[in-house]
Image (cartoon, rainbow, N blue to C red; front, top):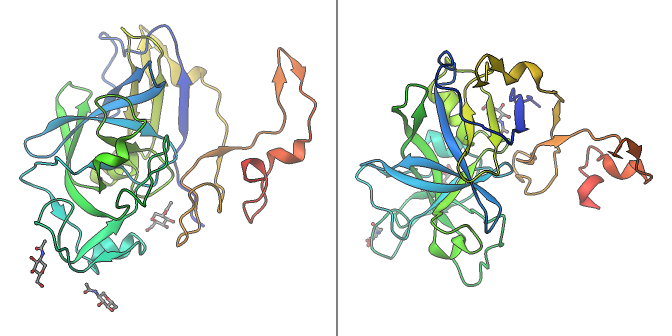
Length: 292
Ligand SMILES: *[C@@H]1O[C@H](CO)[C@@H](O)[C@H](O)[C@H]1NC(C)=O
Ligand SMILES: *[C@@H]1O[C@H](CO)[C@@H](O)[C@H](O)[C@H]1NC(C)=O
Ligand SMILES: *[C@@H]1O[C@H](CO)[C@@H](O)[C@H](O)[C@H]1NC(C)=O
């Protein structure tokens, strides 16, 4: 199984996460502020989607296979469906195909359209009340680059969703941004569009209201956050491991979109916590850890 080369850095830097103005330009082509919603504790990015580009607030999800956006009020002059049996849909492993849609044509209704089954990680969608099958769409996605202008991916693939999918998500949010271990995650799609940029992303999460955090896509560093301080040098690194059958695993690729770290023990205030350490591991069938 090919291992995804995504050195994932999540650092919690509480004072200031704004890249310093005087710092040399970052290597990363794209970045976006991360705002914490204090009533839900969700982290939100603002991406630019559609034509004309519209700011779109998306909840960050480190364990989602693909991004999704509410299509009940989706207006764009450039969106396209992914035809079933097309080369794109065949690379996505079969979720399903909508052969005929009876309703008025629109982003979430087309004949011969590839389908996704998105979910809401905060409040699971009640598929008895809300149609879980939603059209795959391709449209423009843009994020700020390090020069302060927008760089766009013209064939960003995501799933439509419906208003019923937004329950439990922060106010103003209209979808979800996938950063999971998947070929459809935003970092991987950016890497495909800008192949010169490394397939890496970093996130600085800030709890501050006045100083947002930042997500950086396509840079191995330096991460210059304060004058002369490159945080990529002082971070601690640990390998990510992938659970073949973990939460939300894809029945076709047998791969969980979630990232795991190989925990061996837990210390609190320097004191080892006594518990059955076998519970921390999972086997090649995915059992163990949080699956028990
Ligand atoms: C897609 O291909 C399969 C197998 O080749 C075929 O059975 C199916 O009808 C095709 N669907 C469409 C919408 O062309
Ligand atoms: C799908 O095709 C049928 C005819 O086969 C047509 O009546 C219907 O309007 C089409 N639906 C859409 C959304 O274009
Ligand atoms: C991504 O695509 C590559 C090549 O198509 C494949 O080898 C790899 O397993 C895929 N990764 C995931 C997480 O699906």
